[in-house]
Length: 60
Image 1: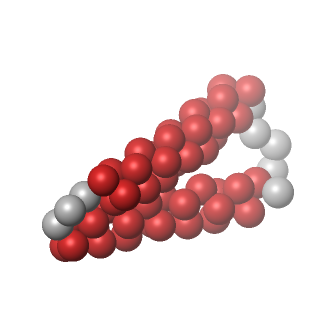
Image 2: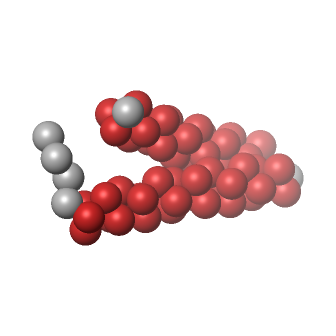
């Protein structure tokens, strides 16, 4: 399946956002003192990283 330039730009934006969210959430997790909040941030960071990896896998 051939993607248009607009679709490729959209996917590039999504990948960038997933990477940024992963980095941000990992930073939040590192700064959190509350164990439950720390675990939540880490879980969300892991999910963002999994989304990034999954999308990249489908594009390869």
